[in-house]
Length: 181
Image (cartoon, rainbow, N blue to C red; front, side, top):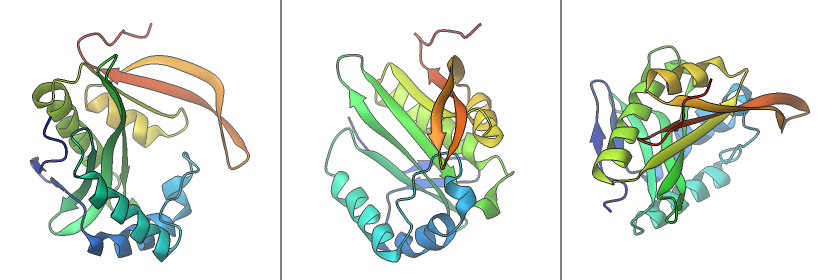
């Protein structure tokens, strides 16, 4: 396992986080309610939380199954993508991606997801990669499908976020990913 290595795409560089990423993570992710509207999760709400999140990334790079990338577009932090909860029994892992709002609509999420899928399924020999999103999160749905992930299930009313209830869509990629019908 090689863990978090630099990945390059047509438009992006997926690289390890650096401490200087904390400020844009706080300013563009932590302060923008749209960034956590469908997850309810905001690890960048304060400058201190953003710094601590980056420290956790930096500390994690010593582990073989730690995957946490900053998505860099022309020298600017455009987003984050990571893989977590590796399960050695099933040789599977879950991914999550977030793109700063000013970069929405450019295809960066699907480009980053595709690069990470290629790395995890190909180079890392992980059998199955999963992800989920709220059904109302059309941008995430499009990004996962454009990257080649398949919807494998829908859990009605499974997500309660900030007082709202959403259906949860589960996606997978890999040779054994069942096709949702």
